[in-house]
Length: 64
Image (cartoon, rainbow, N blue to C red; front, side, top):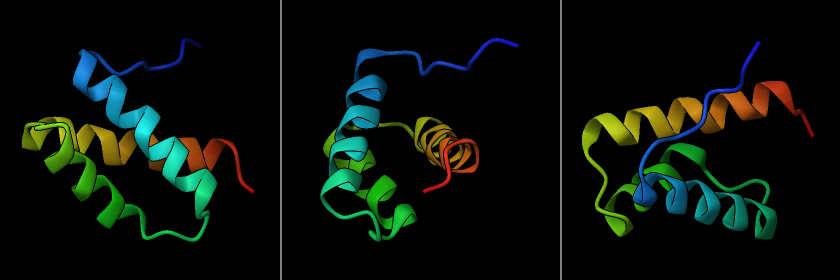
């Protein structure tokens, strides 16, 4: 089964940014972080929804 990858430079930058923020603070509020990333990287609502699903799915596959 192939892994879903985000499309678009801004979305990829947002995924990287979220990953870095979560390394700094693993207990950070994920929906708030995704919302912040949406503003910082000028993501569409559709991209923000994808981003939230993407990072939640990553949590499910890689529990701490």
